[in-house]
Length: 191
Ligand code: GRF
Image (cartoon, rainbow, N blue to C red; front, side, top):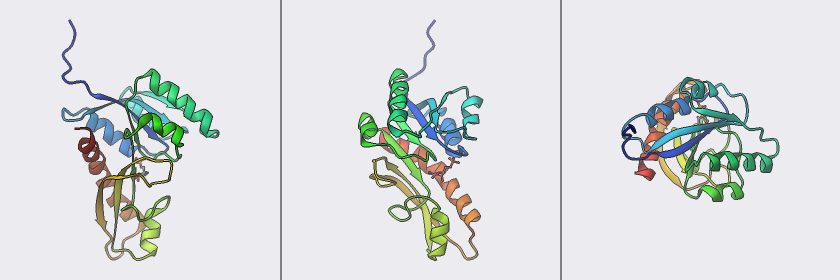
């Protein structure tokens, strides 16, 4: 007999390059009743530590070499289409997609960034915020465009920078907020 699975969830791919704490968090979220997504695929551009979460939860994983962006994007598109992926979450993925790739997922590809955008696009966000003696930093979930960390903002959260704050302590506070913000942003746009 066919198992009753409730309303169909949106097949989602997560792209990573690093630790994968957001991936782990999204997988856990995807298993809750309220989640509109199911994670079907994890793609990394290298042998990232975070791939272990794909193994742990028996999710399909692929490593795609991004030395040549066009070839890599075409490989990804083939896999994504074959698996009928409808939604993409970037979670610490260190490559920029071209318009040609993004147009296949209009309003269906989002990213999380560790700053209160539009401030501090790019890398080393906490170091730069501390250097500039900012009062707060934060995190942002936004739609992905071909321009780095520049798409429309979906949700963002401020994080206070306290006296004696270090890069490590600030990063820790921000990632904690990221783990709440990413699921909230998904619920906001997909519900
Ligand atoms: C996060 O800070 C995210 O905002 C940024 O890269 C980091 C990824 O961390 N894009 P993790 O791999 O999810 O732990």
